[in-house]
Length: 194
Image 1 (cartoon, rainbow, N blue to C red):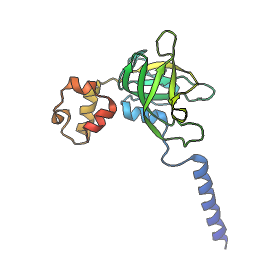
Image 2 (tube, rainbow, N blue to C red):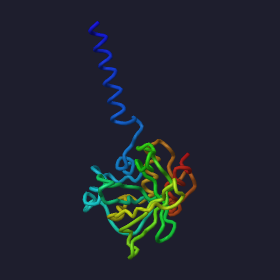
Image 3 (cartoon, one colour):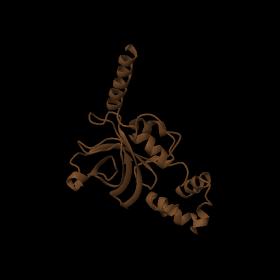
Image 4 (cartoon, helix red, strand yellow):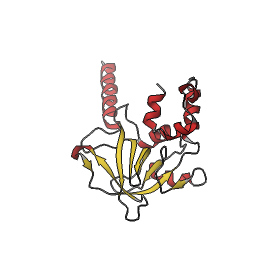
């Protein structure tokens, strides 16, 4: 009978562990941004800005494929990082990111095609607001950001390398030149590779 008590204890603690640690499918923003952008940085999102020094170009203008690095704060102690998928205008971009959820929603999911607007007085992308789907508008909170980290490999070359790794014929098989591929957004590139 002791083995039954032990079995109940093991099963019970496993269930509690799963509930406390969260679901298996959850993904954090930094690993997701690393995977999508090819920017090979590790650590909490807010540390990416300092870690990028000397490894990647950094700046204050959005570019497709760049990582937008949010500063840490009381409500985001690890900071946040997202990847630019489109530059709509000088003050509006689209991003994709992970583990950014409205209140009450499950954490760890991926959101794509999310609008971000530059709210900085100098148009330097030092403060942004993020689209908040529950209100069908931009959220009220203004987030401080460090800026953008630009990938080390141009988007067209990164796409070709990824396709070669996956065993596909590469960008040339799709009949597109490097210049056209560089202009494609990340979402368009995904669609073109299928």
